[in-house]
Length: 126
Image 1 (cartoon, rainbow, N blue to C red):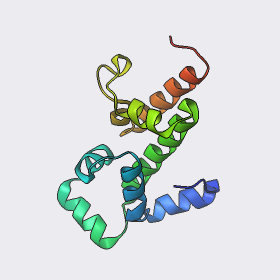
Image 2: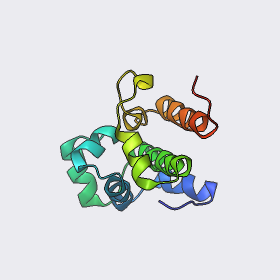
Image 3: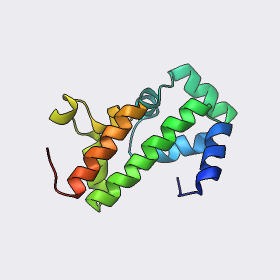
């Protein structure tokens, strides 16, 4: 998803992002629909409904936007799409053996992933 002005982004999330946004970030991260659905909190049958209707709910849209934002941030920090993708999908001791991508499923977890990316960028690993 491209960078959009804040109010436009908020409006898009409130109206529900197009299902294609879900698919774009899913493909960029090379995840199956089932795995991406799990991270976003969408069950298999609901995922099929969203695909058919072409629109995500507000809450699902917010999670997809957060994942997209964190992936963009990881690409900036690691300066490489493949390294960013690998880092997001690799279990880390810092996250008690869970992946950073798993942590993006909640707002507080997403903030922690962003914070860790900032520390990596600045060489602070405490």
